[in-house]
Length: 423
Ligand SMILES: *Cc1c(COP(=O)(O)O)cnc(C)c1O
Image 1 (cartoon, protein in one colour):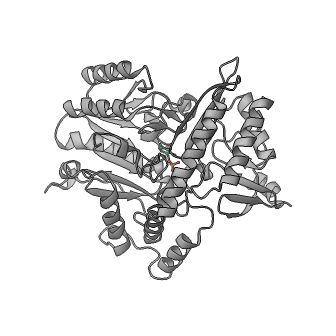
Image 2 (cartoon, rainbow, N blue to C red):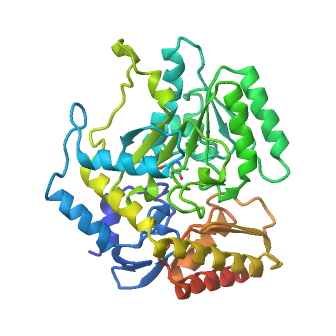
Image 3 (cartoon, rainbow, N blue to C red):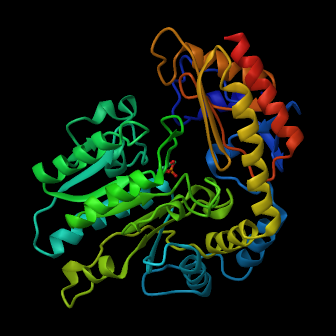
């Protein structure tokens, strides 16, 4: 039996209708921006394996750090114990995060990082004896697949089976160009009409809905409105963090600091599942009390896994090298050149770029659904041509590893141009 045949027998894949979807491709090895399947067919990983892998597959520097930690202390429980790797990660993050972030809490993935932030926002007011139970979120947001994260997410078919079982969430429009005032007004109204505890947002780029972008000034204004009304703000940087937008964090563009930040995806360079939620001292202090009931009763077995911590430290070290920073700027420049070339194509509605993130919307007669027929055609075309891209409806986006060469990038661009001609 091939790996594909065995897979069909045993495995249940994420976001997959097994009856109608094609058999998954069995990948046997990866290096840099490239992947090879079991038949040795080569693919360019143009989305960094769901945005986790900035420094390339099978990175030796991170692997060595992991190996050394695995043979020193692979794991120890974090309740009642601590260790140097966790402390070093905290010290490193304090250097690079917005200055108001003072405390860090570990978990395992983007959804749990968000889950922790939302629970903290709700319990913050519970601890202060204030009744605030509503969370504000953007339309078409994506914050993950656990329950509170799902409640805050707005992509309907991800969540439709669970409607009516969620915490209270009010949704406001994203302040894309021309919609800023509508967004500000909706936020004010949401705060006026509900007991709002927190506002969660993907800063500057909404990833899963198709790389929808908006300006830092608009986000600063939304945060300001929240601050005036004592509503906690949560920046979900799970996708945008660690260089994707051209700065270390998307919040580095914004003239206002959030109360909490969620990190995962590129945190460990795509090696070990890990996530972090960070907080201001003021948020932490609302849980600091003689009363045990005011503590945050949340944790995960693998909290602050030392191996993941070393992968994090190695990744941040790589990110901060001149070489990697130059790579980010180089890819941004190439994207802008490609954007200029493609945006006037008769079959293109619009194209946009921020940092290493690029997205192009292809014209279509009907409303393209997330996993619709145009999406399937595009996806299959890319795979046939050895490029891993996962379009969202009629939106094709690139989010490459930072080490992707110009030659590889040009192949990705060329394949997208051919795909646009094809559909
Ligand atoms: C991917 C993502 C999540 C969820 O992360 P998982 O690790 O898949 O649970 C949350 N928020 C944003 C912005 C994301 O892109």
